[in-house]
Image (cartoon, rainbow, N blue to C red; front, side, top):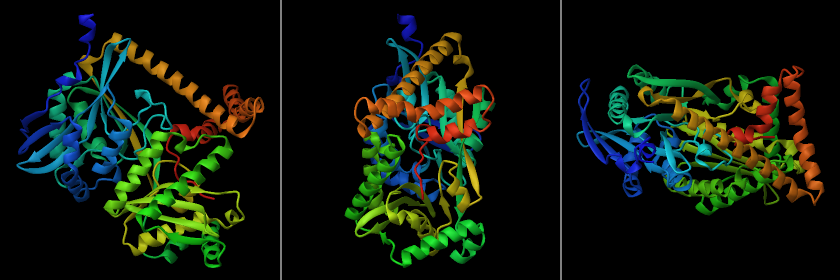
Length: 473
């Protein structure tokens, strides 16, 4: 038993502090944060660095701290946030944690992961199948120090490789430090890297004027946007700007309700069926409100919300994050969801924003509004000396078991949705009817009758594969 328990080191062996000199640049002090208390105390320094760099909203202290509160901090996880200082100045942060995998009490793998990553293989099997609720994850670095911070981090990982046998980077954007610097340097340093393309992320460079923007979209899209604008002006619904703390809480509740009702009607549980996700989002809205990082508007008919859209505002970018709408009311024919999108573009123009980011997902409406897009990448890094057949076998076995549990949990949630809409035994028949089209497409793909099966499967199962937040009518 002693030999097996030594397969991977225990989490308590992670060092609290080290100082290392980079022979290719000036001396950087490397500090490892492994307690929530120290993590909490870094907020001001952390966000100052984030706002000074090209960081996204998902790299802020608030987002990652709340992610750790709701999705991390498990018994098999330990913070491993690596700070880089030049003299007393914080110039870089690698927000990571270590996660141990074990089977029948035997630890066989320790992964180094980014805060904000997916949690499916940690046992949550929630709505985020793989990549988690954070659209972009990266290392933070003061502008001009990206290469220096990257070298220091790679040196740290090399010198402490005994603490892990795998590194998982998810949702690293095209121009991220992880993609451009960390992965190539790790591979050059003897690590094995597997890079796979993940989701497409459409984005819109904010135009100089709304008229100019409308001239550049297709005639059909322009017609629908103009119709939505006129509907608002003619009183079919009223667009309200959410401003106060209480208004934001009310708007989030409305968006949650609209989102859940629509997805439940379609037969899916909806993102907010996961209570943890609901609590996480409410904490995010509360924290971001106090930081001035929110944008939200709702469309209302006779005092009732029929559509709502929530975005994050950070570093000259609007992140179009959550939406909900009621497609059963008469006003839905007047496209209140599109009216909210056009007001977002208007506000981005008047607010001197540089970009509207529509985030992960290839939904059709995003590519109707913009032709620009980038991709996210998932990068798995293995330290070659630690790879051996036993570890690989155990890893594949556990991953297979976890995937099987995920599939069962997914089908159970779908069955629960039908049970709430129909009485026994009708709900079971409705569940079969609901799932049969996808089964038929699967069978069709096996015999070569449906060339579009992969896309159709992604669209139907997309709620379990990615965060499909932004919907419109």
